[in-house]
Each structure stands twice: as C-alpha cells, then as structure tokens.
Image 1 (tube, rainbow, N blue to C red):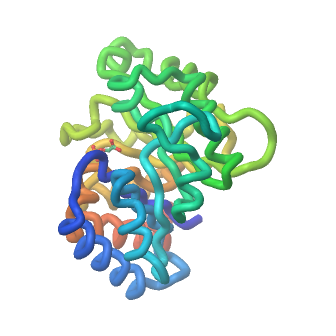
Image 2: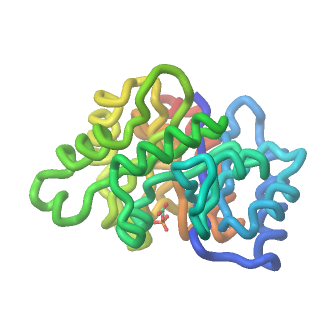
Length: 251
Ligand code: PGA
C-alpha cells in the first residue's frame, strides 16, 4: 500500500518560507514513479491554507489543516469548522495532536467529535494518539493508547480516517522508540482499530531514520513536524517512502 507522508508545520512558517518549500516538494513528486510515490499531505497553519492550496494546485500533494472545531457552525470565536476547511480545498485535518490536548485541554471525546465532524464534512481526519514518558516507563504505553482509541475512534460505519501514533516524548526531542517498540505498538493499534486503518508514526522522523521506520510492518507512513520545514529533509523522507514501497517488507 502507498504510504502517507504528512507535513505538520505547527505554528511555523511565513508567506516567504512557504512558496519555495511547497514548490520544491510539488516538483519532487512529479519526478517520482507514480505507482510507489507516497500520498503527501501538507498541513500549514490556518492563515496559509489558501496560499499553500494555490501552490499545490495541479500537484500530487494534498492540503490538510491542523485542527477543526467539532461543531458545524456557531459562536466559537477563533475556531474554524471542518466544512470551511473543505471549502478551502483541504482533504485532511489533524485532530487530537498531543500539543492541542496539552495546551487546549482537549479530551478524548472532543477529539472523537472533531474526527466525526471532519468525516461528515468530507475530510479525512488524522487522529493522533500516543503515551507520555511516564506511561512508557511505567509499562502503561499500550493501556494508555488503548484508552485513547476507545475515546477517540469515530463511531458508525463507513468514512475514512487515519491514525497517527506519536509518543509524546518523541515529539521534537530527537528521540524515537526502538523499531521493535514501534512495530509492536502499531500491531496493538491495528488490533483495536482494524487492520485496514492506516497508522502513521510520528515523533522525530527525519531523513536519517525515515527508511528504517517506514519499512516496519504496520507503519503506513509518517507525520513529520520539524523535518517538514526543510525541503531537503522532507524530500528525503518522501524518497525513503517511495523506496520502502518497492523493498521487501516495505509495501
Ligand atoms: P516532530 O513532530 O517531527 O518535530 O517530532 C511530529 C509531530 O508533532 O507531529
């Protein structure tokens, strides 16, 4: 199956930075073999969605947002709805990122409501889950992730969603779990969510480790923060995903 490589710019970037970065990625995608090249999604901050959407038009990459509100409309100052994002050309939206859970006190049921709102609006939610360092060290990582899934998995049949396993202690730290731990957690997640659900890995993915991580069983792609702000780094991750689709065990 084709991998998904998702750029999460977080609250980084500017108009000046966006244009060369996005154009380089769009150009790279045209040079890769279409049957193995991954699905690439770029999630800039909300003010740059229109700009990046315009730059991506006619390219093979999709546009995504970093959050949406659970309600279709209403008195929610500062928020945006899933249908507004859809209207702007988004195909994906990240929900439940650990930074939003921590900084905006988002709960599991709220994350589910956002994911369901996204699907109702025609977007594919990328639902983030992942344990803290304390939970990992206490041997509770799988239990924490199981509870997060129980709370946040969309209900009802049909509709497409993607999961992203992002151990909190690996985000922006340069630390990653061992390959065995990543593969084990992805098995655990697919055992709960279903084998058909793509599970991305996120947390300090960079050019130097992408190949090994993307080749692991059950890893459907990567959610990339810091390294997605560099065309060279992000491009190398896309190339690693292209290669892993043709290497044994990587498809
Ligand atoms: P990172 O962030 O790649 O900078 O660790 C990943 C994420 O938070 O999505």
